[in-house]
Structure formats: structure tokens, C-alpha cells
Length: 215
Image (cartoon, rainbow, N blue to C red; front, side, top):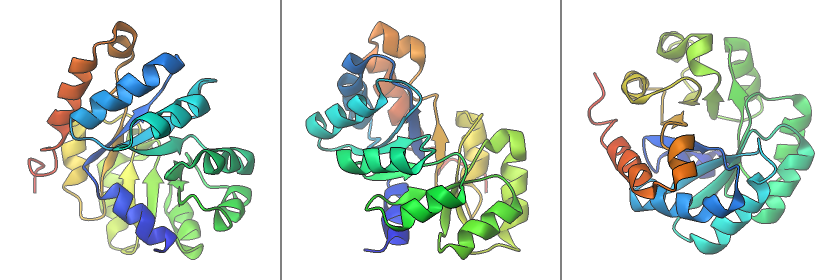
């Protein structure tokens, strides 16, 4: 399967990919199990904490139904690290030439970040059809993606940044949006309190977002 096909298959698993910040490694497995119990299998663990790589390792080892990727991948070294762990995918907030060069030789498919038409064109030239829009709300949101659809019809997006369930519906109604990324599925207070039932309920509620999105 090509890298584009791999990413397309992963993004197509559901309407929302939770953007997960793990501060305590002990929370990683119960958090992942709670999300999977709610029907959300694709998990993006961001590399914004010291616990992130170990969290990915533990989830991969103990939650076999999860499809685990790494977010906030900024450098070739980080891409190598998540490849060594066996992550299913990597996500970057932007796309530097060095990172794209590394991704071309990595076993881990990359979802590169874009924020402008020029950046979308640049990653399309590299052979990517699926990309992240980040920070989505700050750079124009659903209106920007709607405007990009006609001149850049090959591009498909997972917008992330500032999105909540109501805003998600607007994005998911667009033909060039495959899914959205959202941190609301794993609220910090719920994680700290070990309120895994709440997280399962939040995950379950996302499954109908696409069918309920305005057309």
C-alpha cells in the first residue's frame, strides 16, 4: 500500500482524531482504552511532553485495537524515533524540506501540516494528497478550505486547531475534509481525575458528527 493510501485509510476510520497530550505515562493506556471503547481507534499522541514517546510505546503494546500515531513531529530525529516505536503514522504542524526529505525514506506515513495555498501546492508537488490544516481556525477555518477546494481539488484535509464539536460539523460538510483533529475528546481535567467514562462518552458522541453535519 502506498503512503498516500495508508494515510487515506487511517484518516477514513472516523470523523475525529483525538489530539492527545499525555503528561503522566500512567494515564496513557487507560486513556487509549477509553477512547477505543467509545469507537475512536485512531489516536494522535503529541510529542509535546516528555512522557509522549513512552506513552506511544505502552499504548502500542497494550491496546491492540488502537491505531497510534505521533503528533507534533518537527524533526527527522523525531520521525525516526516514532518509526522505531512502530507508530502507524506521524503528523506535523508544518512541512519543512528536511522533514519531507526524511519522510520520503521513512516507513511511517506522514500527514504534513499546511496553512496556505502555497504550502498546499508545495506538499502536493511532493506527492502528498492528504494533509493537515493547522492552526485551522486561526488561518481561516472552513471558509479557507471551501475556497481551496476548486483551485486545489487533489488536496484532502484533516483540519486541527481550535475546533469543537459544533465547528467540526461545518468542516465535515466540506468535500475536501476527510476528518478533523480535536483535543476536546481528551480533556485534561478528565484525564487528571481518571474520568475514563466521560472520555468514552465524548468519543462515542463524535461518531455521528459527519452524518449530522450541515450539507
